[in-house]
Length: 243
Image (spheres, rainbow, N blue to C red):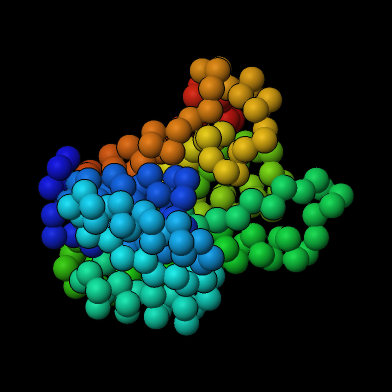
């Protein structure tokens, strides 16, 4: 897919590490200019931008709390000024506060909804005008197997990811005639910081190992490359069934 996205601008939220960083690399390799969003890990994001630059790509870092409307509006302005109007949005920012039912607090629930779900709404709304003006857009939301299965983090996390898939379908149905596709990728048990220290979970996966961030990025690129597929969720589960 080298140069398949030349002239396109992508914004990846939570792009400094793990799945987000793998998606940034894949988009840059395909020729897109990439805006790497992060909230705190600015050093890591700048390192990634430098790495993309050394390989001949274009990348900038935009620090912003994507759960806040003003911060999102400012971020989109900065990306547009630095790289051009946003064609591709990957909503990857998320938090995973592991809690049992009896430990789960209202604050845990609210924070999870803000970062995992409201951010998707805010970022999507913010990029739509430029996508609509050019009748081309790709929005990919990084969900989780927890949207449909029990998951290991807690009911608040399940709800945030199920909500994300609801937004995916709702936007897809309403934007399909405008050249904008909206899809989700739902990974389960991927080898990232979120899963570190829980090697015992690998035994639940029929394939016998965690997935990799690069495997998730490949699924994202499949969706970015496909103008006919919209409103769908691609599950990456190593053979685990959710039903």
